[in-house]
Length: 115
Length: 118
Image (tube, rainbow over all chains, first blue to last red; front, top):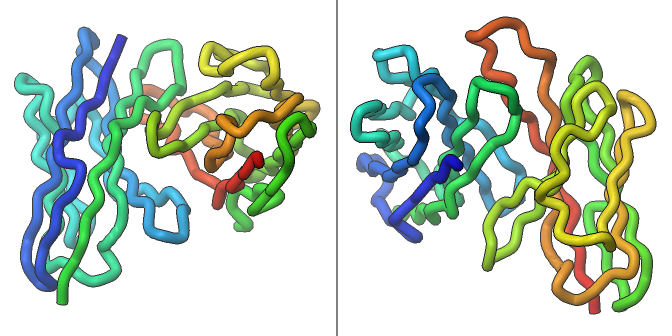
């Protein structure tokens, strides 16, 4: 069975600085999808960025980028030029491409942004 | 686009009462997911449907929980009888049909229902 691990329960960053959130996963599959979701205090789950395992190029969405290391089974999220609105819980998630639409979530990292 | 709609947003009930949570997926989406979020266990998938058919209900905690999807635009999650340990935020999510290997089948989440069982 696949598992997703986020080893940082909490992180903090100052406004305008850069922060990296860690995520590792375990799978025997060769193809899959990886996601980062943001959950602000409003509770709404918002997709931040996604990556297909067969693509070597790291995904980028404006200030958000990932460092996808397939061999190491690592999928970290980098937030550049942090803003107060980035403060939230961030969840890493895995989805197989085979036979299932299930998302497997990590336990989350709470990000605080200080002015 | 209205997004995934859940009702109620908040529910407070007493132990032993029946609770029904409702979800309307995004129009055109054919997969629907029910998740539970607690501090202790994080986000757990309870059940998901594809084309209104339950595909995987292995996450449903026990017989007190049941879910239905009578049509493509409506699903319910029912807890009967409710217990204090059922207190959590329950999310519904939907995703569009698969369109090839490169389809992410991104899941779009509703705002959640915060359930408190006293």
